[in-house]
Length: 376
Image (cartoon, rainbow, N blue to C red; front, top):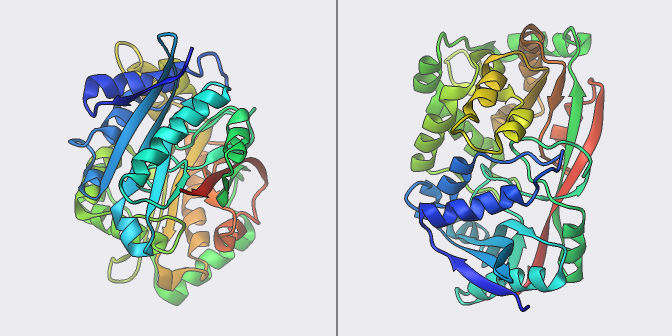
């Protein structure tokens, strides 16, 4: 039977089916980590995601013989396009069976949608902004993923290349062994940096204080530190408020390190969270009726893996050793929490300053991913 492509209406009931298909598609796969259904639905729902202030999107599903066989979302980020002077269409949330007809029908539908809106190139997989998942897995298919990454089958990159798409950016990921003590060289550099630049580790006494005292500053710093990175979409005030409310309240205080100068200005941050990978697998991305329990255990209980969600250093302090101060703060906390391993999550492979920070740690580079690009 021929493949039928249907547009997905931007309403909760339809988007939920779209998201749940992407989870059920990997049923039984031991390496796939499902997203929270509610998070992905809200990301795609215009009324819930402030990125729609400057983005437009359309999701599609592929059907054959009355059964869903694939999905995809086209996204146009007008802010990034205005910043870069390009007319770029993004694609993301892509899943498809190993069938050229299905893949082509989905990609053709998104590309046509983009052409109708004046786009001249397509890149992906990418989300609305850098806070969303990005990068197709190209190596490490037998490694369990994280809540911040995309998993896909090995045939996905094959179909991208078959369609004439080429690599536009690449990321690497590491499994890092957490030392039982701060490495001597890191401790020495951290001490020098503290004295030379009059820096210190902030000590908020509660999540409420973290949000109120440093929340805006944390995300403003992310905007400054990430501004020149591949495809970065600066967070707007509405997005910052959204992420402060969504994420800062669930973090463990001692999994967050905030570096400030003598005026209490934030110059560096390290944000991490206990691994939710196995908990999300058990819950299959659903909080109710019983999915909340493994998620709560992952957050509150003992966990030997920590996910490094992001590190950001103010541009004027980059390459000056502030990363060492972050690690000297976090390593003792990680040991106190029982963490033995850390997941770096994706880091741009050509960002040497980020890659160099791991030179003092035992590590294993276990996953790679990339974004593909093609002219329309």
